[in-house]
Length: 301
Image 1 (cartoon, rainbow, N blue to C red):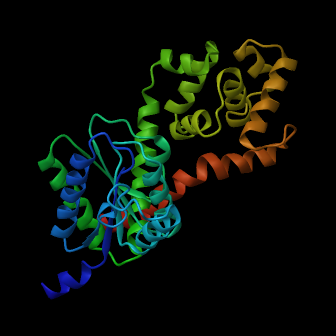
Image 2: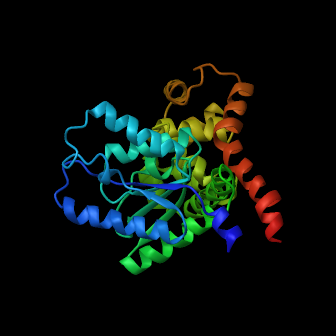
């Protein structure tokens, strides 16, 4: 037991919306429940509303609140963040955690939608979705047990790679089964949609990469279709133009616009495009997959 107690040390920062809450008292009780779960695995819980509550501690200057909360987030062993209510403060605290390699466990009701920006933050190593309080207790305790069993500083490196792999594989698998109609609606370019879907199904284009082009780089319609067909799938400009239904000059303009959006020069050489593809679309998921297979995956075998 002594060894177990030694491993489970440190503070858990309980993050959640506090400002302008419609049901402030009920939410503070909920955060107290999260603190009980935290303390059940041997971690100390820090609850901001006990110290810098916007109502009970209204006398504190904004800068003082920032300094207090920042000090606790950056020194925490783990951040437990409730994501069921959109909050600027929670977002800032999760980003502070990322900057200081503090792992974050998100907790949120099963039926709530969470910002993809928050879910994609590398600090988020566990997401506990719950339907009732018993499920919350079990799920959060299990997540904290996994983190608390690791040496301080190792949690983010050890867990996040596996989470990246899981997210990548889930995205790839989901994209493999996208209906033609959905892809066509996404691209709005008709015939080329089936070509791109086939590329995902056969592994020539990562589903995660396609979604990243749409999400992070905001490519849409013909710009997205031209970029994928020409620069990713290496179709000629003439073939790309035919698939998209544009003349070559319009297709070239679309390609230049798409390249500009992803940070490439309009007249980028093939080598530069290939390097971008490896760096932006291929390397991140395959690196995580390699780490999974040759470290955690190997150990599990």
